[in-house]
Image (cartoon, rainbow, N blue to C red; front, side):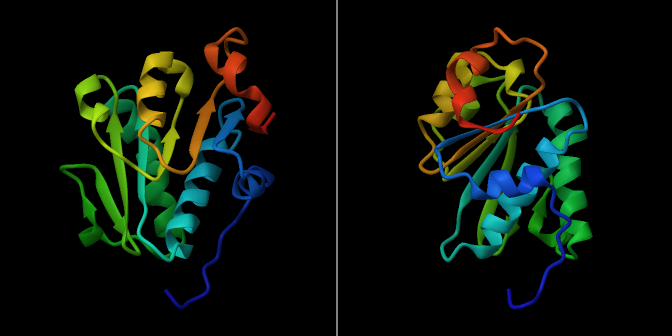
Length: 169
């Protein structure tokens, strides 16, 4: 891809882009740009990678995933002039970009995600999941794990395990 792309980036994008730790945790209120910014980071990573990446984006249920993070993903691509309907397999919720694969799935059925391997994982609204779900996903992830959640429960396992790696406070 040899063209300049326009990207309206927030400080949340900048912190996530600069993050080098394996677990990058984003805690914030609704509409704090955490999900949108992480998606921008993942798109830029796919565009700038010299080798194809497999990027998994997950949420507890498929309806919630489609109404939120998948909708934002498509909006970002459209805003950047990159959305291509032929690259979007709507049946399997997969999008191909610059040789990289974005797969969107729910984890309401453990069998769906136990065997798949990926380079990057983004867990949206991680506080909806139990620790075992995230453990099974992250153990099959070779590079980074991005997590976002709303801080409704400060006793959540997320706070206890990952807040030292937070990208957003």
